[in-house]
Length: 280
Length: 203
Image (cartoon, rainbow over all chains, first blue to last red; front, side, top):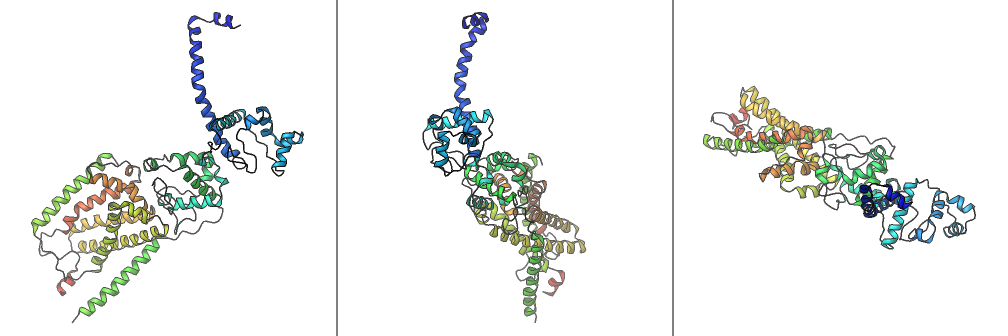
């Protein structure tokens, strides 16, 4: 067949065969790396709440080297429906269930492409060695944040904790319900429901790039670190869940007006008294 | 606004200010005496102007200090409230002086004071409608002002700001350029600006 195929091709096409194969070989690592990156994101969003890769057991087992310990087909079957594999009486699945206090993993509806990316991530981690495969903190779901992460996000937003690379705090230009003494700035849009509007998919790249016409030049030399991106995302996710009635805004202008009248009154009394004392 | 305006206006304004100072020196107008009593409007202009000028100058000369000060929402609010009171005092005082000049028929002086009043009112609008100006001023406007001072005007950030911010910045330069003309007193018989005719004759 091979002979026939080669002979059947024109001379030019035959000459291209090794070139195409070479290109495929050269492109393979790049494609694999891209898959591993997508897999890392997927792992952070779907698995990292219960599993680690090389950092020990959590609610579920450490998945470092999982594709070397188990058959890929078994892993696929287990991920798709752990309950079914356990109920079949699979000895490995039963042992895992016992080891992890009878907690059953929920079914994961992954597309074949997502599974491929996830497996590429697992293999990449195995190659790099244990502990070398920490997923990006920014990739974690904003809604999975701990109270400490939300509190840090609030501090970063208000500016009480400085951004690591010296960028300006969000508070000067943006408002979120309940921040500061009288709310945040109004040069930029109100971000109270930004997370609800943009969702996880929109918020993560927005915080990573900060490339709006105003913020782009401001943050190009002082981008947010990944932990900062996550803390801010967590804070905004938490703020967007706040269904309470908004706090009535203290009217900044009326406050200034009252202050001005007080100062004018003081000046009138002070200088009026001085003028009277100066009279003969 | 076009880049040409951001590049040209600061230096044209500086040239006009130099001419104004020269004119004032050549006119040899008598300075108000130290003991001259002040009108309430004059006192308001001086107190408010000092607060507003200090706020703007601090951001321009020490932006990192101002950024550090504003790192607490409480401190930022206090600074903004004090600056707003300063701005309102300035606007109230300028309104009084402008009306007095207009009543006295000194239309040129009234027009110049009216221009300063417009600038103060646009600043008040910024302070209230686009609040926490002291926070964004150091990041949006100060880089432009500093670039102007080193003769390499770069309005990349300011050009993205709302129109009223751009207008306030450029008209501020025009007002600074006209300031020497406001104080210039070629006619020695005219009453000092910050003193009422009644107070002057009483003294």
